[in-house]
Length: 209
Image (cartoon, rainbow, N blue to C red):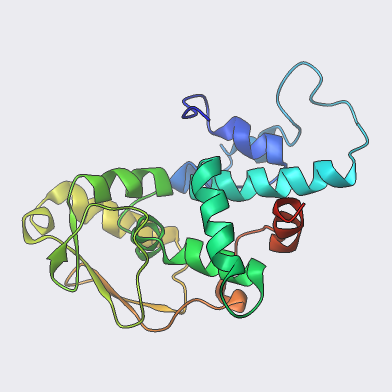
């Protein structure tokens, strides 16, 4: 699947749910989901019956769009979740939350996951003092994700960090040190800690066919 380069607000409208792809804009009255709460396109306002498969497909697409994954990485994640102990759907969501790009977004370094992915690729962060540029890397308990020393001196990063924290709700499994621009993984995310509006059970059912 090619990378999507169109208006991301259309993705939220297509999934009939806020996916928070535009940062602080999603929390204002400019949000497209609030202004036009129906699917995009000429026939967006028409009601259509959706099959069970269609419901499962929409949940999968929603999950992929929230975390910015393509089909192959998503299937690989599902296969890994299947081999783990516990509920497959919870395992999938837990690993998605533990991705470095998502953690950078959750801490408040970036306004969206796509921006977080770009910052990671540009070598702005370290994990436990070691540099990394792999967005899909999974963090573990007690890992410390920190902005590199050179980036800490940037006014752009400082202002963005303060702005993002002003409207974001920090997850309970991450402890943020605002003064030192770092976040510590206190615990691995549990199903009760994940706020993504996705029914992982439906995604598992789809991939299990």
